Image (cartoon, rainbow, N blue to C red; front, side, top):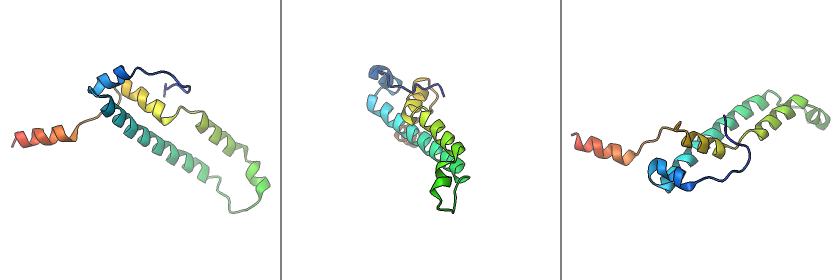
Length: 109
């Protein structure tokens, strides 16, 4: 993903121009961000599940460098909102309006 890891200023007019309404654009970005975050969480939990231990030995938990490196990798990744905004502005997100589809199907009957 080519999303920036740092905070950048966004032109809200450009974001709103995609749908014609800034609020609709933000709703679409929000939904995509939740999808990305959920996928990342599942992926991270899957990788960390390999290290699950039934032993309550604190020394063993703190010494696992591979687990720490995996966690640090995910912490350094761009935030899901930055990734979603980047996808939205590049036209990589497909969105549709349920009301418009229902209206079209009713007119075609």
